[in-house]
Image (cartoon, rainbow, N blue to C red; front, side, top):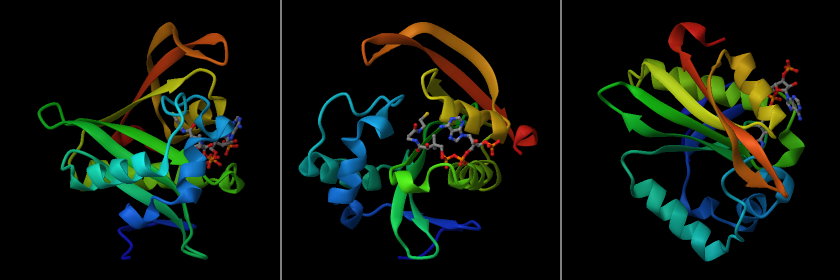
Length: 178
Ligand SMILES: CC(C)(COP(=O)(O)OP(=O)(O)OC[C@H]1O[C@@H](n2cnc3c(N)ncnc32)[C@H](O)[C@@H]1OP(=O)(O)O)[C@@H](O)C(=O)NCCC(=O)NCCS
């Protein structure tokens, strides 16, 4: 499968139906991985995952990449741009590194930087936005490090593990990207 964007440790390529396997499924059913994500509340099945991946590859309004390790071609997560507004030239970023052994090694920073740069330079996007839950400090830290600014907060908006958490809105313009 050809590489679409290449970083130092990883490359991004199109997500394909053959990626919808038990390893990918295990990410979606892992409590730690999905903490602070909208997914993970209900159990996921392999059939549902295959339908999701098939659906997404037919959509023209979602750019979904498989994140792969350059050293061994292993598929370790996904990153996407969606909710495009072609008049205001904005879109939303979402990232999931499913293989936990890759956390804390700068991969999140590298893939977000590559994808946001692609949004600005190739898709002519003006601003990238995202939502993150306050009980996901790794993600908040990552986005702040990339240059995202805090833009809004819905107080006690999401229920997880018996508690309510704030939902934070963040945004970044090209000149703010680190
Ligand atoms: C959130 C996620 C993308 C972070 O990716 P990562 O590759 O582990 O992050 P990086 O190694 O690039 O770290 C970026 C910064 O965040 C900080 N960070 C990483 N993990 C952290 C943690 N558990 N707590 C606090 N800060 C953390 C790092 O210290 C780093 O800053 P530094 O270089 O100044 O130290 C990854 O953990 C993940 O996919 N989690 C599951 C899905 C998810 O939560 N997605 C985001 C939804 S909004």
